[in-house]
Length: 255
Image (cartoon, rainbow, N blue to C red; front, side, top):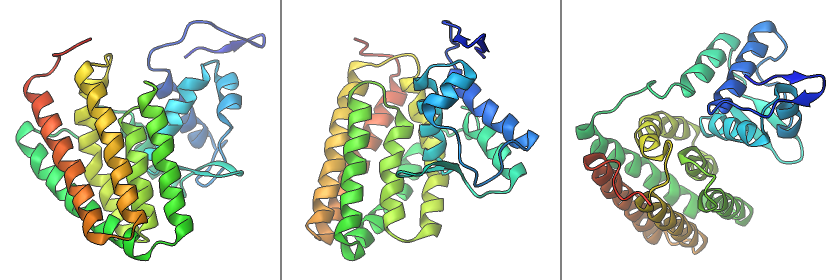
């Protein structure tokens, strides 16, 4: 990892600097400098401490938040999950391991169908029970994710934040945990197509996917349960078709 020397940051940075950020968090937990539930340094402060770019810290924090290992509280900061120290360090390590959960090509459709079923139920619950403030939160999260994705800096983990917000607002914590579990292998699959490249096909799918997020939010705002379910089904059907096609012909259509 790049280190701070004499108050000056080295210019070079490893491509996997975000993984180094997570490694440092793990080391701090093991040493007792951090405990479950503790507040993490701000992105700027942590970047300065580690001698890495702020974007490396942002990427690491986004990944950890996507998997529920940290949480951001507006105007308060970012906090480690309240999970036992040994379990937390193990989860932190595994999240950064691209081979943590593997999935075969023939399994991907089943995983998508099951996840679509869970999210359809969660989205319908939000449409039926969420108050206006909660729906505004979802709308804001959709806009935030869209901005990250479409400016070319976002990743599949950023996309997951929208879906986790939807699950959070449903008020059904068990199904939020289930969603996180079944999404992890899907993240690993899509990361293969993102790593080291932004193909024309991937960029176009991201544009369509963000529009589909907007359609889900619009249906929820209108309190139309059937339209909400249909928007979720459409989103996952399109995603399933795209990723199945990409798995069949990876590496094509580069810009």
